[in-house]
Image 1: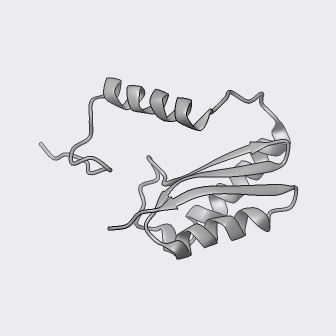
Image 2: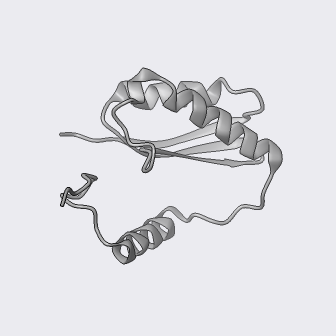
Length: 112
């Protein structure tokens, strides 16, 4: 049986993933946002531009390294990337998107 590689050595069972997500959501003070067509379009355009860049080809689309939250035109970027260049690229894309008022870049760079 072939195991998918992630941040862990092996993919944990779904219940462990759910526990991890709940802990991260609590630490980051995530909240459920009401659906906003303009915010959703901004989020989708930012994600499309980021993940269509060859710089991000080595990341899985199922578990993307950057998560984008848009609330009334204010963008927050969360995640972990492997270089400062990737971090700057994601922030540049978000800042250049029409309809974005501010960008809070909380992306972290891993040190290997």
